[in-house]
Image (cartoon, rainbow, N blue to C red; front, side):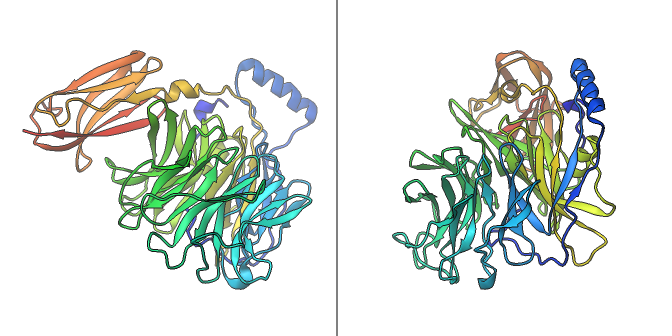
Length: 501
């Protein structure tokens, strides 16, 4: 199956808690075959330029997987029994708890992460005296090391914690999260990093008040996460070279969740001014700064009550996974690809021949390997109440052409000029290659005013003029308008314009 035919919880700041009642099945093979036949089919498939799917599903137990090693052989997460213990899973060992859980003090903030080689795990753990939650890195053959104590300058305790851990660098040396700053006027929690190399604790700056680091690039030099607005909501944020930058400003709860090893692609969620929804998003580094691409939400997502977030994106940037909330408390995992956009997780897996037990519901997809072939997540049996989390790992042994990521992302939307304007403004769009592009004009309420262009645009710089008229040729009123360009691979960019008479 070619990539073009791929079909169609948000993490809480305080952590995850969902008590479990039973152990899960270890491994379920959904499609197998004789090795000789598989080899023949592989040769035929490669010769035809198609993809070969020999998927497997492994069960990690009553838990929440959150991270996958580079090659997909190691998965880490939290147990679902209320102890929040970090675990490490491999096909050989099964699920192995790593100890130092915080369940006895009822503190479960943060999610575990894993290094590229699978030998290091980061998580929120307990202090040596078993009294406070703190940040830690576990190394195979060595065990846990803690970032605190000692308590850093301006730091302190808040309730039963010193801080929590949310991400780990690809090389396994640096963690990120936040540390508590009780009594401080500029925020009671700030993002930080800590490295095992020299035990350096770095206090990351914040634009306003509270902030948190969620993930790091390979060497830990770039951190992504969220920082608060003046209203107390979150906005996606990146820390680099000692500075801090807000990727997308709004008054809604949004954040940056993952970053590729090279530090050039960030994923998460952002507010879409046109649709009025919180959308899954990707930010791509360009010569002029971070370029935002809104990926949208799954069909059926209620405006104002639903949202989507991409948790992780593969290194090539051609496939990512996340969670789509249709309305409060009701959602599912999704897979996003350059060719097909966002699709429901179950539809995606079904298209590759993956089968799950009857009544199984996929709640979220949370991690993906560098090549996009291994995906982890969790779900539940809808016939069991209360719901019991069941972690799973899907491995897709497919061979497919890699989409031209650079070309697909090669769309730059320049600011329109003049702006404000009356009655005509020029909208400039630069493309790395010729492709089909639709350019729409919306009013401030998100209503379509005019389809300015729908067809092929040449490579290079293209200029289109809007004369302030709608599709019927009528002059529009003064006010705020949005122009939105959508490329043939689903990438979307928009900008704000002001018509003044």
